[in-house]
Image (cartoon, rainbow, N blue to C red; front, side):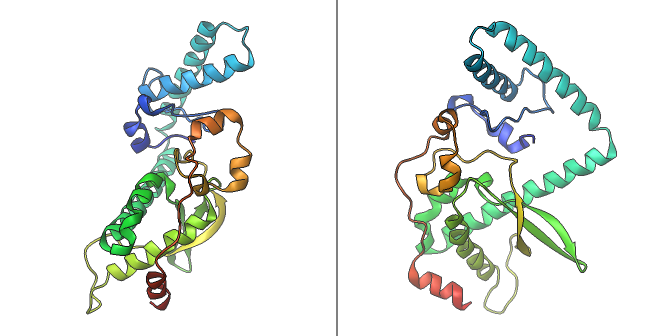
Length: 246
C-alpha cells in the first residue's frame, strides 16, 4: 500500500517517523530524495541495523536507496497503463469519501452543543481515523462496504454513529428540503479490513483495540505514543434518546 497525497503533503519529520516495521509505505510517485522517502529509508536502515549490527550502515542505506529508486521507476512506468489508472482513480475516490466523512462529523460536533466537548477527539482521530469504504452496486443501487480498522476500539464505531445520525437530521430543514453540504451515502459493514493507513498516534489507550495493542512489539508501541488516560466515548443520554427516536 502507498501513502495518499494528503498524508505525504502534511508529513513533518519533526513529528516523528512516517513508518515502522509494520507500517512501511514508500511514496513511489516521488523520488528517493523526497522528504517522505528519506524518512522511510531511515526507518528501514534503523530496523535492519538493529537486526544485523555488524553490517555497514552506509552501505545498507546506499543499497536500499537504490532499491527505492528502482521501485519508483517501475511504478511510474505502470501509471501509463489504463487498468492502473482506473485503480488509482478508485483509491482517490475512496480517500475523498473518507475526507468528507471526517468533515461531516466535525461539522456536527460544532453544530450540536452536547457534542462540542468531542471536537478535539474528532480532530485527534483525523481523516485516517475514520472508516474508509469501497463501492458495491447492488440491484442498481450504489452502496459502500465499510472496512474495519483493526487498531481502533469497536466502541468508537458506536460513538461515531451518533454523529452520522445527527448529520442526516442536520441535512434536512423543517420543510424536508435538503440543506447545502455533502450527502451521506448508504454504507454497510464489510468483513474486510483497512490497512492502507497506519494507526493514529497519541490517542488515549482505550481508543485502540485492546487485543491489537497487546500484539505490538516494543518498537511499534513506542512509536504509537499511546496516552495513558482513557477517553469517555459516550454521549449525553438525552441526545442519544433523540437519535434513537429519529
